[in-house]
Image (cartoon, rainbow, N blue to C red):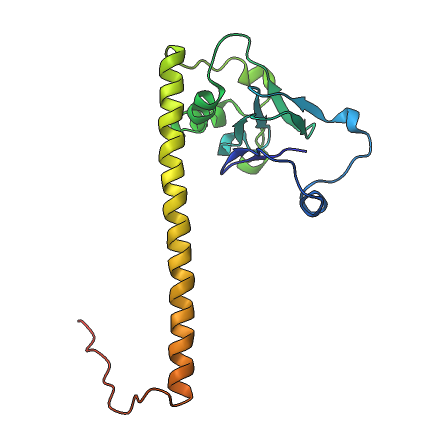
Length: 181
């Protein structure tokens, strides 16, 4: 079972049993699920307007609530995923979605298939997708470093508090810095 996220597109790994229990209401009849192949574009009808699009990297199954689009001509699926998750595209998708309120909007196939997008030559699509993949990898690396730094600072703070409380460091002459006005 694969999922589509508004944050990261389609998952590239199968859900664990624990995730299955939390996220997926199981159906014993696997025939209702839709098969996804590498290169397919998948979107969640109910969250498409929020960017719930993904390009499949692996074969798997998705919820019957998702739409699986298999491109007929040469495209770079990851490029199209990035394009459809861009703010202007999401606004077009929102405009084409039907429902009584934002959280009831659904993008049906008959509207999605009529969305027109500009497709540069394949080599340009690939270059753009590769560039964005690289930039996002850099951002993810920076986020991981910041998370690690935050964890280390919390450990240091905890150790300093412990040393102060147990009397291992003398704070009797400590004066806090003056507050800026």
